[in-house]
Image 1 (cartoon, rainbow, N blue to C red):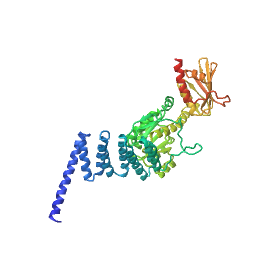
Image 2: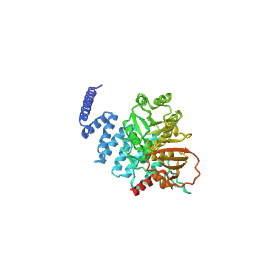
Image 3: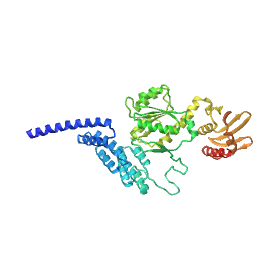
Image 4: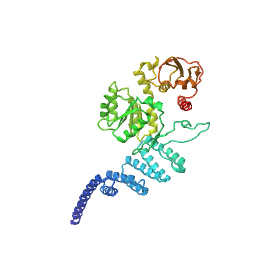
Length: 446
């Protein structure tokens, strides 16, 4: 090695040591001033120059988010620097930030192209469900929204068409549930709206318990918010070991567990649950960023109730959770109260189960028969056909007037007897429609 090369190498080594010390000094500064943008900028550049890509990506992303609302072009520049240094899995999240920045400034064409890049990465990672969830949560894309959205759907092999004879290829109808309740967002997820759960339904779910197991506190937070919107109780654990400890004195009606966790992962946790007769019958939902078909099939073959792919769509999970809890509600009530089973009558006091809750319960259980109410010397009846109200009778009244009068009872006893109903249907509205009418009825009576 020539003298020149030796000198050059020595100088380079001294420079590296100096820069490393500078990085450590800037990190200490950042601890005291976590929002110092200049310190973040210098750290990002130094880490990039020394191939510390993971740290550089972190600092550039923080800078990008800091400028998202005030200087969008600068935010995009930092996100672009981060994207070029990031691994493929993280690039999808960065492109989401880029798209979000463009949405904020109403640059819809750029937002569309950034969204395409997000979807392309998901498809390369074989995460089609995650791509679909991302498309569902994309805000409106301006005047070309329909065109852009159609092209994004076609990227994942889906179509939006209308056929002859009224076939539309969609479940959406005018009376379909409308998303109206906002659930806060977290990194990687857009803010989501979920259908508001009626108060009566919330009251039924209030006795149901859900255990959320995930080492990502952000995911635990958003799922807990979703469960609270439904009305049920919930608690969280960071891994399978911690969850098993909680199960000692808090048995849930549903478990939602991540797959990839430290100490004990979701697979190991599920196996432990199946080995214990006390927990083997609890519905288990797997939560994972792995959306591959073989992963899902393996989970279902072991007995997993459902498989949710991250990043999930909160409004969809809300509906799925309610379906599971509705089925569990019937099971739990049958075990805890034998009089609720299909082979015997249901009876009790209205002080313990308010009449609106009782009607909702009979609807869920698809009961056919007559509910008899008694208070002092007064009697009334409400008949059901497969969970739907048929008629009500009280004090010479029938139909809705009789039902609305009985709904004011908050004391007395009730007995439900299963039997065939031969009388014509007088009440034609659904229970939800009747509850709405009841509110108007009480207003007119006051």
